[in-house]
Image: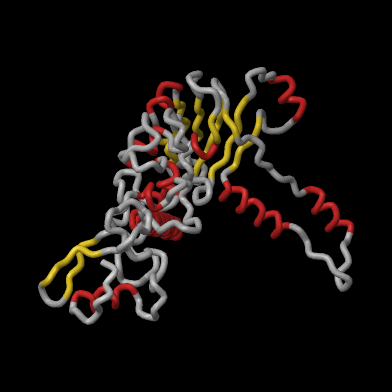
Length: 334
């Protein structure tokens, strides 16, 4: 009797154990299912992470213009069809805002020498943003010392151990084999018209990669791109004056004696630098401005687009113009 009772208790205990185990397993499975796929995978298989892809960019792709993908190991093989090209031009002038870094193998690359150096092969290049980030990290690593806090042996050793990756390569030459990693896409290509914009960047802008001055205003496309005037329209501010007339020396800067090709009214006197259509009153529209013949020269009968009061009589040019139109001023200069 006692033996039968013992067997019955044993079977009951076994089934309770199985039931409890099944319930526990169900709870675990339900918890995992409730997670998203990435969380569940990270929990079950933490070692299975997505590998960083490798991308190889051929010389022909660079000649035609191509985008360097972000978060990838990218190998670029430069073509032979150029003499040299600046890093910023080759990589699309995004170095100040995008972090990227890489290195190029020399043409006389010797693996034995690289192995002996125990460092990265070739010459390094870093974007301005990457250099700034690394400099900030170095400053954070270094221990501050003062008369109130003298350095310990450990502090000195740690400061000695801080290694810096320095920017070395600024000009790229033909046939280089380079590695690059970037946090954002980069427009890479050659600069056939030497206007400081590579072919991929010009494709995006809509400018002519074979002409340094797409809109024929006298200012090269690269200068207009960097100084916020349009490389596609001769008159960026629509004041009637060609950009190259306003920026006489075509350097992208507002030098003495020049009007601003980015604004219609350089002297803020409410008169257009050249000629503009202006609404006066409720419905009347007139074409007025300071440079009537649109040649960039102040001639007789014109007001000066760089002076609010051309004749120095204490009345601004726009007010004088209105008085002239209303017949209040008999000595109109136009």
